Amino acid sequence: MKSKIILAFISIILLSMSSDKSAYLIFNAQGKTVSYAEMMVELQTADLVFFGESHDNAIAHWLELEVAKSLAEAKGNDLVMGAEMYESDQQEIINEYLAGKVDYKSFKEQARLWPDHEKEYLPILNLAKEKKLSMIATNVPRRYAAMVNKGNFEVLNNLSNDAKKWIAPLPITYDSTVNCYAEMASMMAGHSKTKMYIAQAQALKDATMAYFILENFKKGQLFYHFNGSYHSDNHEGIVWYIKQAKPKLKIITITTLEKSNIAQLDSADFQQADFIISVDENITKTH
Image (cartoon, rainbow, N blue to C red):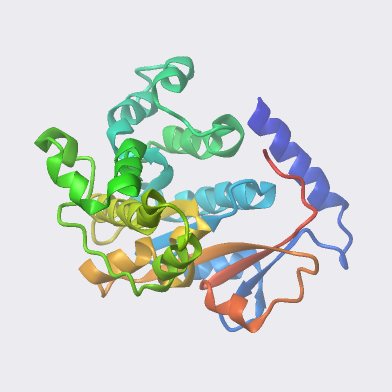
């Protein structure tokens, strides 16, 4: 019910916007405005599509769902979906929910869902259920990322074999010069030693998401993944790891930017993704 209310609210916003006052615009990487339909034509040619969301942005969540619907219509059973918001050791209960073996109440109680899941992610999960599509839990269980944050990659060697099946194969490849990790490490410089491993914890998430995406992707399919934009911006993060393993895959990324003037983007903005969703910064937050 909450998801229907928020989607209805967004629809009212969009319908009320005049032609010279839009809630969002879509740009390609060359800085040209494109329509949703034009973007979808391009997305359908990809092997992997990454929608980088702003976690609390209503337009981003709405468009994530609309893209999922459009891809489901275009690709049918050749569409596979996955998400940062579900951790790899949750896969069984996700499968059970999609198969109708457990109800949402039981799923919610056991699946360690993100706050506001019902508003932000349940609509896409239910689309997968309706269309009989897979939803892949790609993210590392948060307890392992927390371990790395406190003690670096070395702590993973002490995990049991059963635990290791929920993370990317060890040792984790890590390049500290990749911009997203270098920036994160730089931001934490001067903080406590424990916090110095936050970039490695981020890399563990990215490496694990890349691993489970590739484990569940087959040639001829399209894998649609949604995640925080930081995990795929500039073709870094998850995308960087996928390129190390499968450099020939066609990857298309989307990012979400909040702007005071959605028609005015900086040149640097266009480098962040193949498609940029420029959203009015005054759009109501989902949480």
